[in-house]
Length: 253
Image (tube, rainbow, N blue to C red):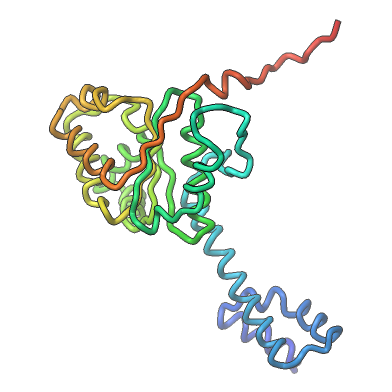
């Protein structure tokens, strides 16, 4: 014959209350020790479930985001000078611009922190509760090419259409043919004013025209991205080169 505790665990399983199921015995123990009221105990059970669901949701959104390994701006090295102040970084980390559908463009040469900042802001957006995704230009172009051919690309396309924030890293890193350029424009145009973008690039608008080989498309693409947009120009020497690692151990004299 099942005990009442076993019945509670069975009910929790049937109702998919994994948070209650995982923490039930610990909460029972604490309630007994602290002599909490029935109301407080009920509240603790519900809080355990809510917290567990929030964690699962965050873990799922973070997995889908495909963030690079380094993405926590709490680890940002402010001793590295690239033109972005601590105050400016902290301001954009508040994510209030996301609620207003603003975009951010991070411009500058290779190695000045564009990707790390973009990934960090994507991570901050996830923590805040937004659906945020980090993709490279290459991944976006490949997805648009295959979205009507493979199920995985089609699923990815539908997922990105529901984003609150989409990071496109290294946009215009390579030249696009006419079909690819049209597909990219149609994609960004579809999301325009519905989704916020963070774009990183080391190319000037003039270079966009050359890489797209179409001034009309390049102008229209820039128009969508730069509307309601904060352009952050980064400069300086490459952080990676200044802090490069070596496989050889230092030999002391």
